[in-house]
Image 1 (tube, helix red, strand yellow):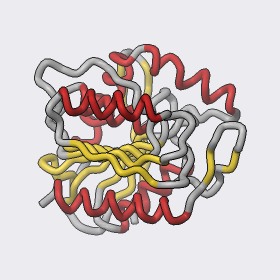
Image 2: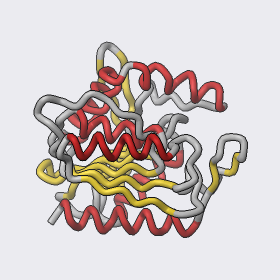
Image 3: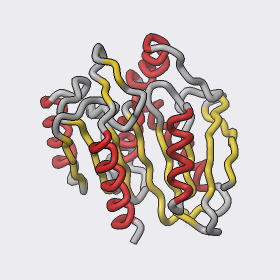
Image 4: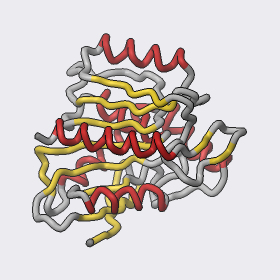
Length: 234
């Protein structure tokens, strides 16, 4: 498997993505938006897993210069400016998409984006920006609403949610569902029972934050993603 780091620019800042390539010559592109920690080893391993099953997979740098936080406080300080400026967030992920589509071996007619935690918010905002990608998948993502482009949402949407996620209370889930329905989006939300935030991460076990790995929900959500890809790439 070939992997490499790639550099691109947006608004005067350097961004450093990580790409894993499959064996075949032409394959769908899958962007991977990271958690609030940034483009760390977790999303790089997800890129490798996706390449093994046949996708050009690009782990996205959302902070610039490949910055990765080393504490809860630093992660929060890195994420907050983007959460507070969703237009800039949308610009960063759209620039990453443009770079990803330029990669050798990418089938630009078949593109998806997945995201974890903060990254879930990122890929949902990619859809909200009106950009034409086949689909987006949010794993235990933040579901706060944002402005939707006048052109509407063209991407199919899959949200994989932990029913006990304290960062995404029922009121936020309900508002998100109303937002998507009002936008006439093609959306679905799978809620996993007895499942907390960050359920895909084996290292997530912080009761004070409400994060906990859940093996069954992790496996089920990955299978749901694969089923979704079969649909959107057919």
